[in-house]
Length: 558
Image 1 (tube, one colour):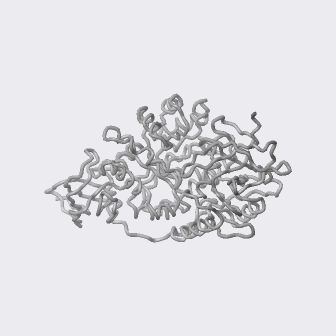
Image 2 (cartoon, helix red, strand yellow):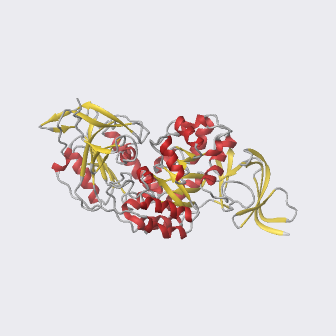
Image 3 (cartoon, one colour):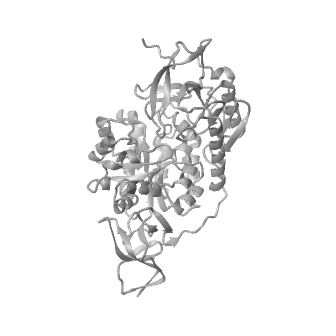
């Protein structure tokens, strides 16, 4: 007779292999499912009868940046576990861009304080392109030893397509190191055509989370990629794509959040929200829950996650209502989750605020009244390339709130390089003042947008005083700030307090802006990312993704 820790019975246990609910018994010992069904030779120390509940595998976020939540890994884990997510595949390239390998070390250590499985994908592109100014370049040599670290599962999203296509030596070394250690490689296929995707495939890059249209999703699964349907705070792609998923191709789809603020996680959820949206759009619940678990594990080549079957981890979500993803309880490694204890940060990841700035550096000289303008697309991280007439006085651009033409500035903050990029943005609808943040993907220099130079300067200098974060100023004074003491990216506070800080800056923004239907801060952060179409701004100026080069703000074309 074999004695085990736990026996769970239910009339509704999801079989991910057939995508059906069926009666079953789960026998669990030392965190693993060791047998299923009737077992005459087994006894259990504890029995849980969930006959009227629905049991599904723990949810898996197939691609996420913890830093984008604005809380550290241990706090992030507490939030996700309550929502049924028991495993994540995290790319720490945000903290790596501002603190190098010490940032990765911090994420690995702090993640140990939570029961959430935090699988680290090593940042492949730090910086994201060769011309970016970040804290430290992470080459293959600096990453290689991490493959011997538990919970390191592969190479994170490769964003630098030109490096892959040109067979850049360091990029190929990173890919080969990953393959030599039998790990998996994630892709970032934003804006790539079929021929370029073929080059990704030839280099064993097998996933993409950047699909924003049905056509892109279908093209990628036809080529053999796994597609991660993304629903973040601004990257709202799931509803655009979900209708292409059917019972014949569902095995190639999983869910991810990529970048989601703590406020969004608490208000609507993470992967549980993805499942809910999928079901609302006609996906069978059995299929949606399989996408949220088994498919994500398969995409990352992990054979012990994502199913309620023998030899799999005992990560289980117990549902009162499977149609509405109503969670009764969460079981992680065979134990019911009930801990809400906070841990001290011990971050040792100070923000780099190594810059100085003068008012004249905020000036934007114009050779024409016609300008290339970054056009914000609500709830998306790509942008429009707008060409509009703007107000020019004494050969300088003047923001115009009536046209929603505001000044946007990026200041290099890591190495006193004294580089400042200045451009024009449309979509934020500020009526006065300015906002600034040390979150500016992926190099995380300081980014600001405002209606006048003095407010912009005040906001920038205030962030230097508080060692990084998010701030909102009206034309005279600070309205609210959220300090982010961990690299200028994450709060060292418990998630509830961090959420309050975030709510305060969001409320302050609304007080100086017309109504917008997107989060202004995470949207602002992505306007500095040059590997996403179309116009972006870095500390070196206005960048045109389509032309793959920097361009003048003044549009001089006849």
